[in-house]
Every structure is written in structure tokens, then in C-alpha cells.
Amino acid sequence: MKRLILLILCTVSMTSIQAQRGLNINALFEGKVIDKSRLTETLVRGEQLEAYHLTAFHSIKFTASEKERDLAEKAFYADMTQNDIKKDKGTLNSEMENQGGHLYYAIIEVKPDTPFDRRYICYQCSEGTHGTYNITLVCLEGKVSLQDLRRMFKKKI
Image 1 (cartoon, rainbow, N blue to C red):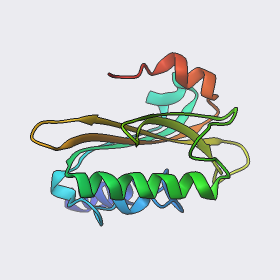
Image 2: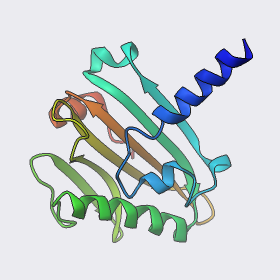
Image 3: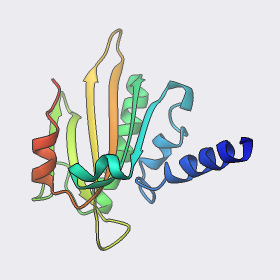
Image 4: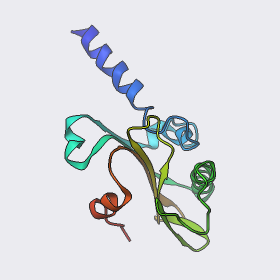
């Protein structure tokens, strides 16, 4: 029984790096920028996502200082640059909004790991209390289109 639990934990930890593999934001998911103990992480794979045309959903939420927010934003912008998406405008496969000179909301399509799926990264930042920021990062994989994502997810204000 202990071996089964260990095998499951190893499998979950190995699959948790799949969706954001090769991206700059991976450092955030791995706890290299924000300590893992401060992250709320959700990882879903498999049948639960089939209705949404997804194969992987991986998200993290955390409260950040201004410096940490800037680091998260910088990593996200670096992934945009690697995927030929300009900061000041989206493409057919991306959308973004800025507030107060900082990234507030974005969904961008990034290069997939396989030619059969699409891969998206999503960013949302809102002001918290006492000079903090609430940040959510999401990595999605599957056959879903950006238009489908727009219908599924509503922006939080």
C-alpha cells in the first residue's frame, strides 16, 4: 500500500511539470520565485477535462509583493516574446489587458509539446490588501480554441 501511494505521488509530481514545461513561468510553478508553501496549486488531467476539450489544467494562485508581481509578469512576458506575441497587442490566438502600466489579464497560445494539441498560458492579477497582488497563472493543453476558452472562463474584476 505504501508503494502504491508513493507511486501515485511520484506520478502526480512528474505530471505537474508537463503543462508548463519549457516555459519561463515554470519557475513560478516549481516554487523558485514564490515559496511552494505560499502557492495554491490545482492539477487536473484525464477524463474530468474531456468535456472541455482539454488534456491538462494546471494552475497556481498566490499573493505577491510588488517585486514578486513584477517577476511573475516578467516571466509571462518572456514567454510571450518566445511565442512572437507583442506586449502592446494580441494576435488571433491571444488577448491581454493592462491596468496602471502592468499586465492585468492575458490568455496566449504558446507552442505545444505535440502537434496534436494546443497549449495556452493565462495570467490574471488583481490588487490585494496592503500593497499586495493576487495572481493566478494557468497552463492548459488540449484541442480547445481561444474562442472556446473565452466562453468557458469569465474575467474577474
